[in-house]
Image 1: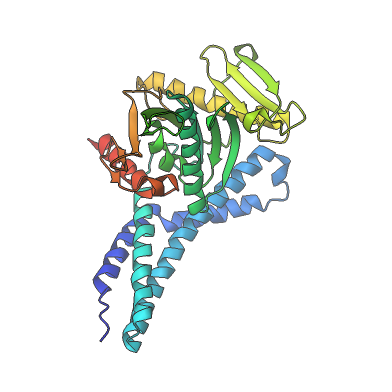
Image 2: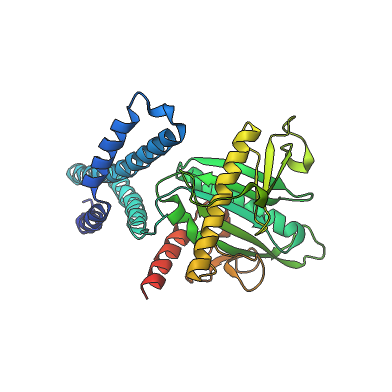
Length: 369
């Protein structure tokens, strides 16, 4: 006789999901979608390109959020039917399918539950992530590239759209820095817990005598601003340099000077963009990121919180938030939450959900304390 007692587990999931629906407020979501759909259908919408992009982006985010809720609702109903079919037919294969779907749904609902903890002002927005290599020579630039691949694989696993905005390749291995944009509901709130200094300890593939090497990389996460932020940047405060986009080893991938680097002279902030098709587009994208960084810097100063939001990240000893050990114990450990993963290869392949969820819960507790 087939043993398949999943009723209590399914009921527990339904109870958690009911709490999530209450927080998300599906009625408000539907009302927002109806309003935004009407705005998106206006014949003169694209007369104002910035407004049109804001409306269509907001509509897409809300539709995506509602779809996640409705899909889980349907999958819970289907799971109960699957369990009934397995029991009636005493089919072990269908029973195994039901157990797997229960496990998958548990992960999805857990992720939705974590999202309900994201209630910051900018949490619902998309995110711009910048990775910079720190101390450690070739090992550090190689590590920065490993982190870039890790985040891109994580986004790919979740089918989140990613746009690579700028990459600065190192003369040896890896990258000096890279900037990319991730666009999905609550991208900033989700990824902002990844901001900080990441530390890699391993036997260096670039050195001799099997020497252990410690290297660092900094991760910065800022929200995407769909409209111009309220930060004025006088032309006299910036220096704009144009250059040709290039690939690894300095190989030219663009025959025109379309890449743009903007330096904010008073603060020393530098933003580079090279992945848009024209110099005008790259300049606009770079200015948007610069304004956002200046706004966050302004907020930090006003609130006297040095590491709020994007924060100040040194990419060196004393500031690390996570360590990756690729020798001996083979471990990834978040130093804030204590969360550990004993399989670094899976983490570098994009398996970040547990680390991110632990970070979000830790931050929420810290705010409430």
